[in-house]
Length: 398
Ligand SMILES: [Ca+2]
Ligand SMILES: [Ca+2]
Image 1 (cartoon, rainbow, N blue to C red):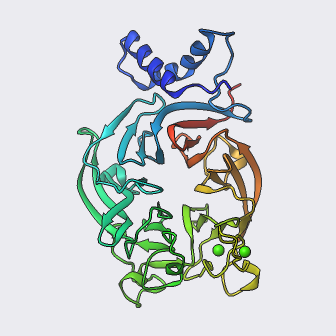
Image 2: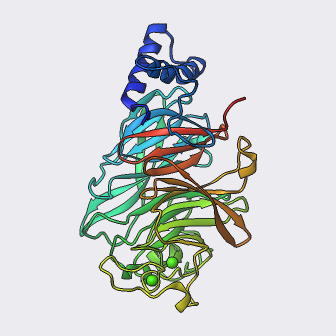
Image 3: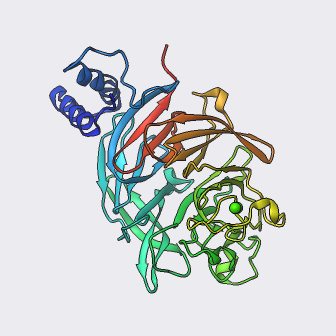
């Protein structure tokens, strides 16, 4: 293994910045990023021409920085990025230099199991209003549940201000699984949230709960009056689609249509085209089965439920979903990318109308927690766990 140790990279990069007396501007950051790792490798071995963060990929991979249990990456319009750490830390990271600093004023998160800080996304008009959205596990009556807060990010002060919770999972329950809580904005500025079923099964089919649903809201958390169940009461009115399990990926394709990736039980991971008012079947149907071996009827036994566009058995454990619209990888325009946890993969998916197929699978050598396209047109992934690295993927130069 020649995987570069993240702490070494970070420390060496910091040392080079200090030695050169520079202020860490973008140009120096880029030089540091390009040169630090080869020098580290050369110190005790033969110099190598490239310093791929991940070996064996058909494109370059560059480690930017490392984090403690990172969960999500949210790009800002200036090309910098926010990274959440599950224990309750929010960091702001410059690119390409990878200088990180902690943002203060974050909400208290319920940390444990799958719970803690979740997603972070800027408002579509962040450049004008500075508003960001954060999801996290929140403690309260009955246990824990995902919450989404809206806040103003003051980058000069390095702080969140005016933090207010605009959405909550109902009800809060015990346990620490299946929060979901991915955040996405559509082209109309509507706020979408994937809400996991908290390992409680039946709430996915209940309109008295927003667990196991995809939720559509206005950017202030109010309910759009054109939602499919808008007339059916507070919680039901939020719902765009139901019958989901643990939807950790939520993103919009080139046509503006929402898709979600979700973890199946034992088998049956899914990619779904998320249709208005549709029921995706969990826990009544799944192409997987319960962990204790009890069968769950497959999707083809109950055609009234929406069939997944792709289903995976054996599972990949899809953590995240992004559509590619950049120019660095022109052959991938319009493709979906799914990060895999247990699969330790990045899966490339081609979309054809309402259908989709797995086109390629890249071995990433570690669990992938999130994937996103950067403003520079590169793909970025973040690894799961302690010392999880933010890694930039781009075509090799020359
Ligand atoms: Ca399903
Ligand atoms: Ca089944």
